[in-house]
Image (tube, rainbow, N blue to C red; front, side, top):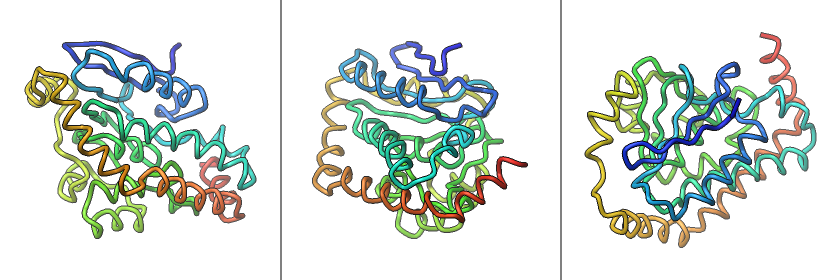
Length: 248
């Protein structure tokens, strides 16, 4: 079974995370697949990229059953920096990017969504930067990206509280651009009319945003954030919190 499914539909490139037994959590195979897709599709003909999940989950973040084996700062940094590079490629992808959260999106799942230009969800979705409950910070550069997308107070509220928000709450705070009953309604009510037909126009506008992020050293800020997470990852508080979580 492919862990990441790529589909081309109606002029759009769909990426579907496909590990439903673990709520589409990210492991090394998924990281590698995403990185390859983002590189090979940079000059594709599709108008936009949409990332979503299989079945009733978007993404539960990093797969702790895999990554809990990483004990030291150096080991953690290698993994975190790898996914951080993937999310920077999402952030600077030369076409519009959209996250459709068809279910739970927590931890790294919210970081993936933050890297996209637009974020939508189904009404029953639960969303949150829950890393603080595991005694770490966002590890893939999510906080730096979130501060580019939301006002300071709203972004920090989401990060500092480690709350799980309902879709309605997330839309109110500005994290979501809208809520749709399902993928079909999202496609017919928003996606099909969202973008002009001229791909060169879409790309030119995206370059304006990318230049802003380059000039503000976003990539470097994400790397500094990732290093801080790696330091906390090595701490005993994090390892105890993960062990407690895995026993649930």
